[in-house]
Length: 151
Ligand SMILES: [Mg+2]
Ligand SMILES: [Zn+2]
Image (cartoon, rainbow, N blue to C red; front, side, top):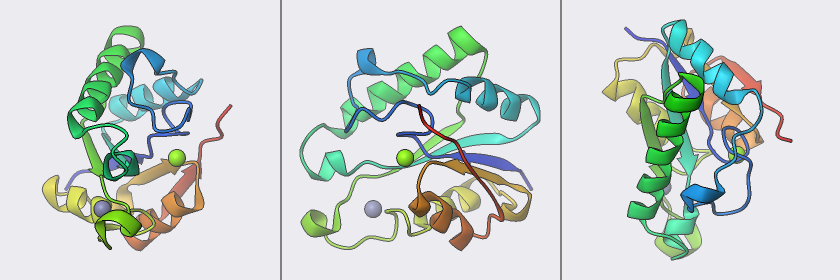
């Protein structure tokens, strides 16, 4: 089985500027790229789990989000020697698209990643900046949660 370090995205990896989707507006939270590199070096799969209701709201497309994630990963590699192994996202908003199992605080995205990558949740870590990150990771059986304080 594998170990993973799960990261929330907005407010945890990038400064939360609100529905971020423009690659040129990406600003890393200080210290977090280095934390991701440390997780890479210690053998954790680094997996991003993120609510992206901007897609349901029609503010940006899934393709725009993917391009942002490509830029994020390229900059992590080039500037910090770090990388993200996978991105899991919820594109929904209950008021618009109906209820789903993937929007945090629900644990659906974590459970999917745990299954896809044969991850032992008990040996894994989770980093976030909100209560819903903590609730979702605990509900997925990940005991170690750490708040990463934004700027
Ligand atoms: Mg956040
Ligand atoms: Zn969802």
